[in-house]
Length: 75
Image 1 (tube, helix red, strand yellow):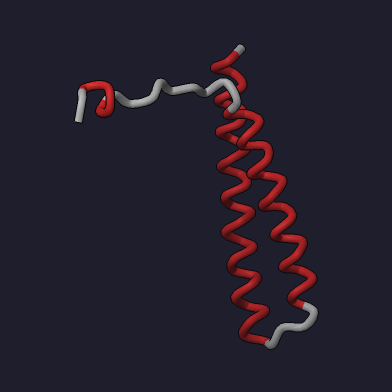
Image 2 (cartoon, rainbow, N blue to C red):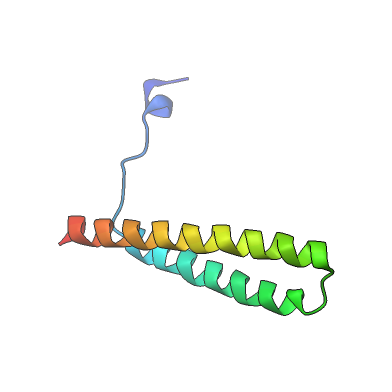
């Protein structure tokens, strides 16, 4: 391998806010779809869906905090 192959790509964070916002929207959509699935789920499945949605909501909070940080770093 040449030295060029070992060089890491530069850290381009210019679109991180947009990427994070897309991730938040996708996660919200997954939560909404899971609520629809719960209508047809058994008791145990409903509990698993509730737990997964709880983790999704926690992830959204983390992503929103990261969006704020990235936004402030860019401005």
